[in-house]
Amino acid sequence: MRLVDLWVWAGVQQLWVIGTLKQAAKAQAWVAAIVHDSDDSIISKSLSGVIESWNAGAERTFGYTAAEAIGKPISLIIPSDRIEEETEILERMNRGERIEHYAPVRARTDGGRISVPLTVSPIRDAEGQVIGASKIARDVTQRRLVEERLRAVVEATPECVKIVRADGSLEYMNHAGLCMVEADSEQAVLGTCVYG
Image (cartoon, rainbow, N blue to C red; front, side, top):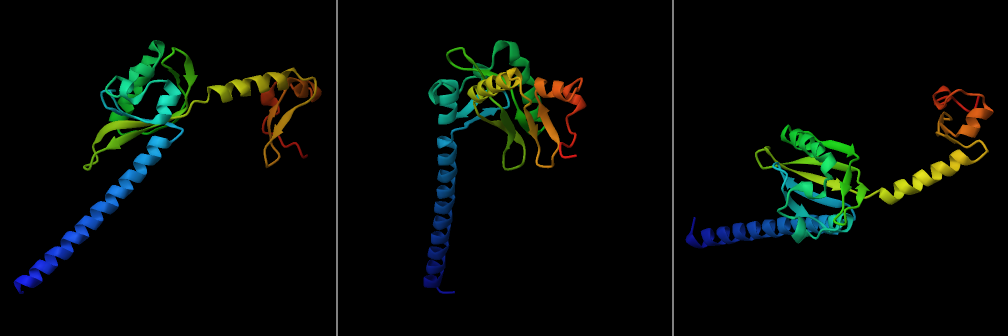
């Protein structure tokens, strides 16, 4: 092989590597933008419970800026009477477990408590070792308040109110409805078919 051919081959290889690196950087920037701009709180932490990343959604949800939260213990947003929950989460992360649809109460910077269903997933390094955890959470405090108010209205109405699943089975019936069908409890009628 001539020296010129080697230079051409090396140049082609270098262009391929540069192209691959540019594609990887673009993909990484894309994911970073998704995480940063998400309405959901996306937080990562070390296995010792130190906050490593904090997106704009977390800033809106908890009231702390990224600069205020990163480097601090995750207990920053955990009410003192619930700190044992975090100990259990960290133990499960160390075992590589994923926690889905966990619904804890957390604290905002103003001291207010909020309901934030979350999913916690282990973060693994290139060798598959767990090195941290990511948390994705959404503040559903307002939605829960609306649901509680709606439930109170439904329970107070003197008319039968029921929720029926697509298959015709009863999912919910208010007190007036239970009295109408002379049921002793909601459990006595839940799951029964309303069509016959």
